[in-house]
Length: 430
Image 1: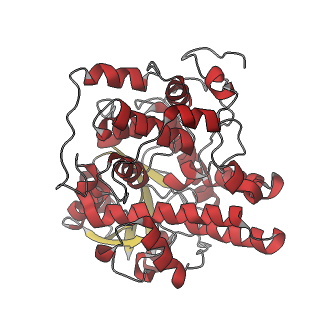
Image 2 (image 1 turned 90 degrees about the horizontal axis):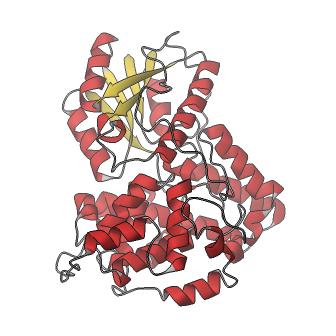
């Protein structure tokens, strides 16, 4: 059998069930990545900003090197997957196509459309817990995270990571090379000098970060204490960009935690990173259950009342996204996001609450801005979290909001973070 495997948000070779299946079934397998117009074209400015584009390109370069080391090559296509994959398959005389099954609605629509045109096989590989190992069907997903966590922890089954040792020899030269400057968004602004961490895409840098944070800095051992930090590079793992682009699998991280616990001991902090992997899984399964509803104004609770937006909503939104509101704690976080592509989890919760409950804006404005700005954008986690805070998601308390002044007092008591990011353009001394 001659087949094609198309990478999307799964830019790795290890622990990759869909790729392993394709290699097992095909005598010759062609590896491709499609620069999709809906994301990469200049007109798709809502979808992705330059920081994430840079990270993805670095991840592709890393993947390309690894594939070449196994005597293979990666083909780059441009356009629409539903058009380019069938064309490429016909050109290479292939009969089957393989994809990692995704959980977000747009990616699932791509899979449905492509399956009508080619012989397509998909396998899930983006979550820690395989959907088949859940103690319930996805359509019976519990309405709250706590219920979900308790049920999966009662009889937790995590599959061992797969090792891909196959020779990938299928071609010597790619149809098209990885672009350097002929696509939009490939010239990101220089990283702001106030940023405390430089993200580099790819499985190799991802594993390096995991090793450094777990073993060299021993930071996972105190993670529950530090996780709400705002300054520095060790208060959180910062593994989310590598998870979002699939450079690392959640199972790789889970078993690295277990290795750490065997070597240096388990505690609440090591468990907390697993706890957050459960949260990530939950939002992925929420996305699978509710589909397009995740992007609707009233989300999964269409029966709840509308919120009326103020007449100056566009002006309020512009001030929020450019860090020019009346709240300096919000402004600092929004400046960091816009100038680095990153914001702490504590910051994300606070600026989202401010947009929804203080400014009275439609939560989707904020979710779409995060989609463009974040290096670690994942549609399931991003829209799931925003929906959760909006009162139209899985939060059992639909009116949840944060007291921003109190939050700043707790998490930035000296004002150091706010002084550091108070300016939108130039560093300030703290």
